[in-house]
Length: 167
Image (cartoon, rainbow, N blue to C red; front, side, top):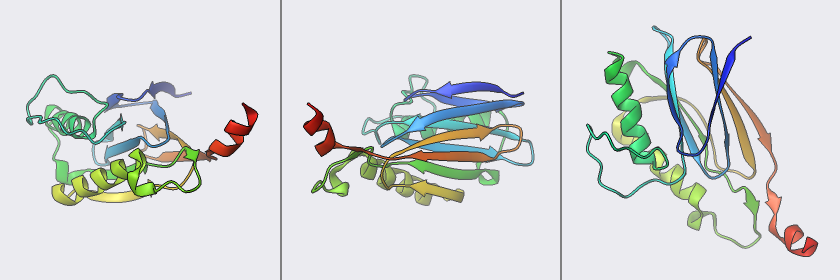
């Protein structure tokens, strides 16, 4: 039986072994990084893209922000003497967890997170081997650090009109 580690928003993990790293996403995004040759990997769960200026060697990183989480993952790559170009990247999340008819997806946090992470991986030039971004509802992720596999379980969005009617 594998051990489990649950990442809340802002959570970061990097390592190896018989461990499942799990999280629950709505508009937040997770970047899963896997190094198949050495069987090590990492995962972050960020809430917002992040506009603060952070340097590559910063120590006061806040995993709630995508830029900080990405810098932390790159730092872990260096700490473990790995080459970022050998990583396989998978991206998840950025959905609408509340179904609000008439709202614009472009204005929502999930869309901003998707735009940020897509731009980030394009600028960095890392190899993205999987994407499950956008849409409605939530995603429950399980990242197996023994194999690099990621399982996704999806759930539906809450309907705002139905919530208002219940009140």
